[in-house]
Image 1 (cartoon, one colour):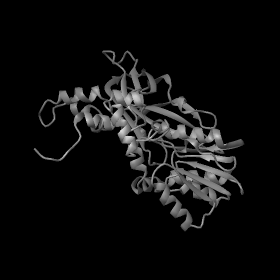
Image 2 (cartoon, rainbow, N blue to C red):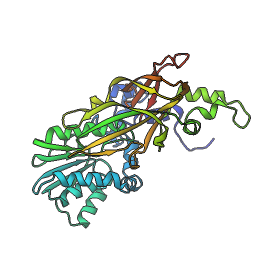
Image 3 (cartoon, rainbow, N blue to C red):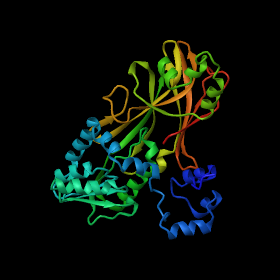
Image 4 (cartoon, helix red, strand yellow):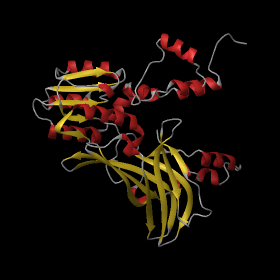
Length: 370
C-alpha cells in the first residue's frame, strides 16, 4: 500500500459540494464536521463568503488568460460594449465595471472621459488589469480585488456595467446578483446600466446531423455493430446541454421565453415558467431546442447571439430531446421552466413536451445550465 493520500469518493463529493459557499449545517450534513470546519478556518482554507461569490471553478477559468483572450478576440462582443460605453460616458463620470477581468471595459470608460473608472474583480486577474491600466497611462482606472457585493464607490456612478452573460445568459446568475448589489448601492438617480436589458429565446431545430453528433441519434442505431441502448438510457437520464454553432436554415421557429430589465431587475427574475408552441408549416422532425439571447446595449443597439447574427464567443446552446416526426400543419407544444437546484445552487432548465405528437408522453427533461 502506498503512503500517499488521495480523496475518497466521499471526499470528492464533499469537494464538489464546496464549489459555492455553504452554511455550517449544510457542510456538516455533507460530512465536514464542525471540528474540521474550525480547523480549516484556522488554517485559512475556508472563510465566510457571500451568496454572490462565484463558484471556485468559475474563478479558475476566468482568472487565466485563455478565457480572457477568448472574450477579447470576439470583436462583435467587445466592440458592441465599446460603442455603448462611448455613447453614455461623459467627462467626469464615475463608472463601475462589475467583474472587470482584463480591465478592458473599465479602460474603455476611462478613455471615454470617466474621472473614476472602477474595475471590480474577484480573481487574480485583478493584478493583471491593474498592471495593464498603468502601462496604458489610465490613472482614472482603479482596480479592486475581492467580492464586489459590498463595494461602495467614492461618488455615485453614472454607469454600472458588467458582462455577466453565461453561454445561455442565466447560468452566471451569481455574477448578476453581485451586479445588482453594486447597482443598488452606487447608481445615481438618472444613471444607467450596461447592458440595459436582455431577451432569452428557444428555437425548434430539425437537424439530423446535430441530433446524430450531439443528441441521441448516435445511440439509436448499432454502434459499430453493437447495441449501445444502455448508453442511450444513461444519456436520457442525465440530459446535457451542448455549445454549438447552428445553421439558421435548420431552425423551425423561434420563441422568446423571457426578458430581463437590468436597470430594475434582480437575479430572481432568472427563474421563470412559460409555455411555447412551434408550428410546422411543412412536415419535418423535432430534434430538440436551440437557445440564444440578445443583449440590449442602449440607443437601439442589440448584441445578438442568434443563428442569423455574426457568430460570437457564446455560440448557441443545444438542448437535445428525443426526436419525433411532425406532420405538415402540426406543432410542437412545450413547457419551459428555469430554476435553481436547492442542493447544488446551479441553474437548471426543465423542458416538457406537451404535444400529443410525442407518444408516449415524455417526462420533463432537466438540463444543468452551468
